[in-house]
Image 1 (tube, one colour):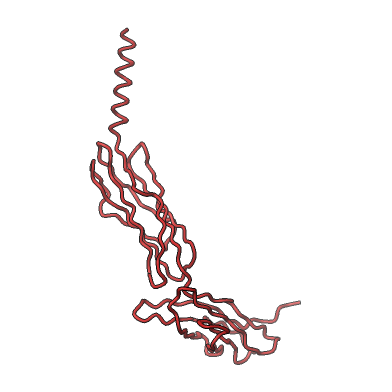
Image 2 (cartoon, rainbow, N blue to C red; image 1 turned 90 degrees about the vertical axis):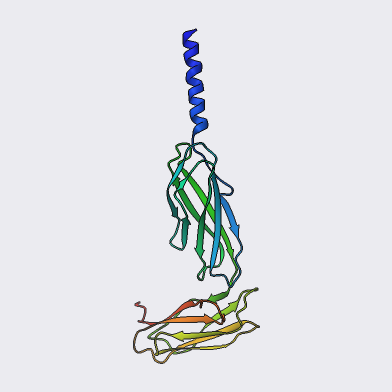
Length: 224
């Protein structure tokens, strides 16, 4: 009888301890965003609440890549308190579906880690193909074409291009359809090796400039 009583007391104590454990509950652990072509960032707000009876300390929030930053106002969450982790993805020249994660580490023994997922479907501003053209020193000098096309919802109506090497020229001409352009790239001579970065800039007035890159080179003859 005494053993049974001890067992019931132990079970009750364990049950109360488990119920008293701190619990950080997130409203969502997976958020999908749909930024516009003019947005510079995609921002997800992961809201949480401490549903337990003990305070929780958030030890760290780590993102899966340098293009995403995660922040929070306080690392300490009292019982019943709410807060949020803000994950900001720098869009840059990224397009298509982006998948980034934030690992949240706490002192909650019941769930020391939580993985948050930010998904962002980024529309295409410009398509640039190819992004690399080259000439061998033993071939004839002829222009090579880089084709640029604005995305379906892109506001871009004009592009400019600059070459980092004055010995390689880049000239923009209208393409085969509206909102398409041909960049004719040509070296002045191929007696010397050259390496040019071509900076393609769309017209986005009032916005932080976004640029796209291509490369043009004069390389040595390929050995037999």
